[in-house]
Image (cartoon, rainbow, N blue to C red; front, side, top):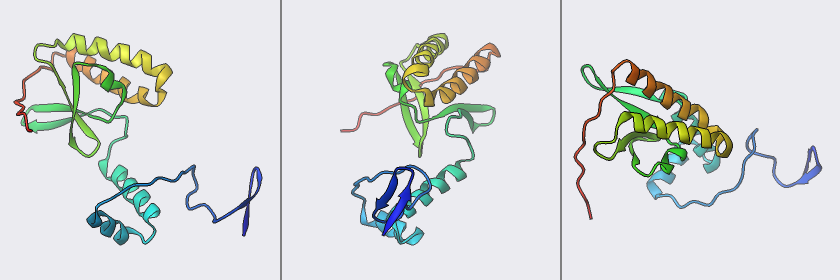
Length: 163
């Protein structure tokens, strides 16, 4: 059976999704495959449903930087994944929940240095990865506002080497 497209007739099955898509090959644990089967018999549709549910349940836009309360009166900045931030050599992203990261810096790194690096990364991203600009702008705005309000400070976290 042929399906009509803007380029003319197309052979094969009808598309599963109403948006651009492409094939991937991935190896998953059997447990995950069983869980996907409970969502939908079609693995591709199950993965899309799981990702859509994850986005809906997070309650924040993907580009949003949030402050999570960690103790009464104390919060931490949490950011979504962002490749541009990985270009700052002294800034590390630690995943604390699926697709949510805590930012860490080398001890003694001034807040102003972080802000300046964010401005540089933001400027570069406008040309190289424009889809990341809203998140970077959100982070820069949040950090700048907290700094100007004297509401941001740094503390050290203990890390342990694991071999």
